[in-house]
Image (cartoon, rainbow, N blue to C red):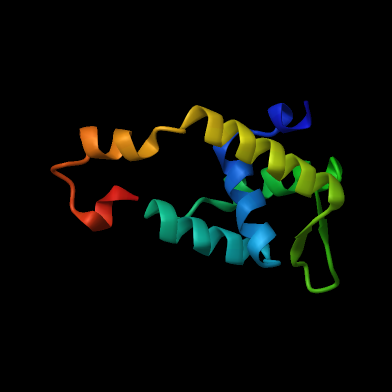
Length: 107
């Protein structure tokens, strides 16, 4: 299946972010920084974006904003299905090992 060929969790996050709003590579990097606490380097993010564009999962407009293609939407759906199947018990996981963490750190 197509979703298995993407490069891990970074691709999944990019698909998710772009599905919510068309974004430039720099905007994607800033959003990832908010979520991870560290901004990914251009050498990390742009090869993934290039690969996804070459595979016609993403496209770009004249302002260099990335957009999901129909193929990208299907890939995101497959990623979400896989994620949900894998982490169906995430609430239980959080209560088990995140008791000592602050609510800010739980994400």
